[in-house]
Image (cartoon, rainbow over all chains, first blue to last red; front, top):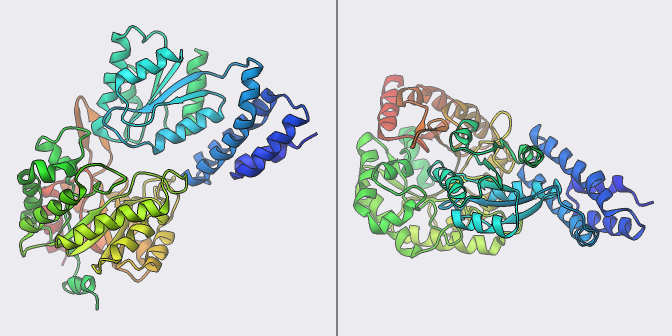
Length: 211
Length: 286
């Protein structure tokens, strides 16, 4: 029996070579791919999130863990797809129009992926129509909007309004986040949820798709 | 003695306040790169620079924060050159011009850019800023020590004095950079990289600045550059407001000076009246 504890540790410590190798071993020995994700990767990334929350981890450590998690997912994903397993949800994510900052958005995207979501990352400076197009095309049930600048925050409202106009607002939940974004602002523009941090974003995404 | 120490022989120098928010007040579109205004609206950029010199700034920056080839596109040589020329005109002989070099906005450790790409972008920008007549180069709002090392090395190769300033806005005490670096780690690394001064700018507000200043000061022998935000922004309707008043901001002047600051100014949300208040606070406390 391969050591899933070793995989968990490799993800938490950000060792992508070990995480890929152990995952391959586990798959070869017949461990169910879904078991690797829900029994190991998800709890490992939750622990990474906890370490970030209590400030033992900062962005570099999170990025390394996300990379280790991705290395394992790359082994597992084709098997999950072949078995017809559904992701926790489909998220279209991007930084809103006019804003070129993508560090926070990338972190949230990684954490969502680690949380078992299928992530469609549109990058930075994304126009409302591109969010709508991607959400419709990929049948997403979640849209995540990021902004770092106070001056680009209004583009979050424009994007949400565009979903209304396109008649798609009822089909997706929309979550927002970024350094200057507050719960109060999220409520005022009609977002379904606000995440204080990348970790909070995963918990929020789960809550929104369950609602 | 290097030029930077010589400028400080008369004591602490007061620098400037925010540019981005001042340009927005003059009509810069939200989300547009302020740097492009060096070419399209030089008179309005100069008005901001002049307002700071008139308010008593002894050091002013340049509107070139984003003008490196990774952070933005456009005619960067012209934008950087015009940025220095505008600040020089406004400063005349009344203030020094420290040319601003901001981060690339990409992460080296995530492999988004290579060290070579970052170095090339910083070197190209630094060379233009120096040849256009800047008195010193300011590497600012950094969060990654490795990226700052590359920027400082590029800036140093021009022969001008170099200030390296970081944004401490993370961690429960707001005393870490986004990448987790402490003031002690930053001070040691920047002294080692050959910076002529080290500091903290942006961040979460003036009330957090004095402890960070003291820690930087204790951790190295370099002059300390301090330029905090006017608090964190809040959104009221369509308007962005920063919570800190000029008076509250300037009430921290003595604490910053006592914590070892050699340069004091304001970052996001601060305005010329903040600089006037700092000048008054310095008169009152000397």
